[in-house]
Length: 140
Image (spheres, rainbow, N blue to C red):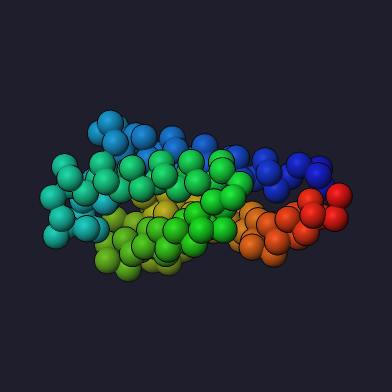
């Protein structure tokens, strides 16, 4: 488990981002209405597919080990924004604030797990990791 768990976490998060992003691109995301109501100043038919492409890019970035440090930053910025509906649309996110989230609220709160996973992955794939790998190659 020690040897592969972080890579499995990285791949699992990538799959979630690629999958959820692809659903936005093809217009089948269950989160579309929530996004429309949160980012009401952008035309949803343009914004939601762009958001989907950004999520797919984050997912692909997690699959390319050299891009992981940069991708984690994008992922964390994206995740911070996903919490906006909890404050902008509390009636949609909670049946009783703050202890009884609706399905939409649960969808958002689960992002805490993605954030924690991103920190775990980012802890392994930081720039020092790559510097040490380069040093090791030069010594051989």
